[in-house]
Image 1: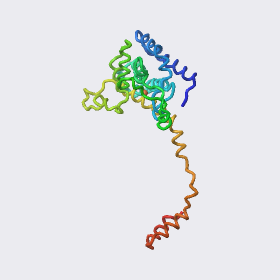
Image 2: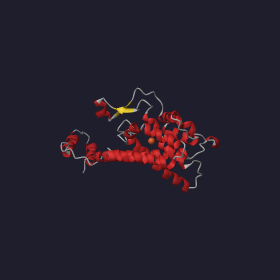
Image 3: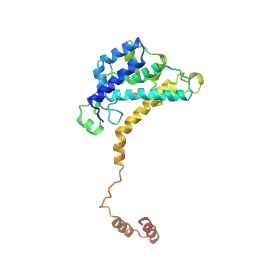
Image 4: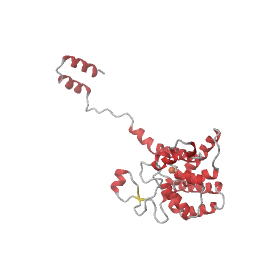
Length: 256
Ligand SMILES: [Fe+2]
């Protein structure tokens, strides 16, 4: 998958447009200043380092994030249609979707994904990018939240939880928040489920777009190998069988 320069620019404009439309002051200014400061890095970032993962191409990150914002807004309508209490605001929803994967950018100095220099790993493992060793380990949600804090961008508890838990139960660390049987310990905002659903759907769409055509073309009917002639196998197999009963049974097996 490759995006043109025009598509990459249009995706960035769309992304900044979500800040203008949905984020209120004073953090609108702070958030825009943050994204403008790191624009060059973020505009071209992939959403992953390996081809097998979703949107691992230049511009893939913003394309993915825009899709998660769009999906979150749609899921939100669906949840509302079903009469679920709105225990979050639309600004919280868009802010969480917008920043759910921010930790993928790395820190202020170091990008998380840098171009792969090992040709073998590029060819054999499909890694167009690699993790930057200079970056200290942090989970993606933790790094994203830390980046926001460092740049004076405040977030609500709902936003904190939605960003932290956006991988749902795909991340073991989220179990204490998501697996609990007592009503009083269950999450008190549906926002975390909406953001998780939106992210899950976006990643699935990106997987299908990238991989389904390749996988289904691999499943196309195989050309028959003319060297494997059935009569020859049949004769050889039957001649090796001593028991007449078994030979009769195998005759049936080899029937066309
Ligand atoms: Fe994501």
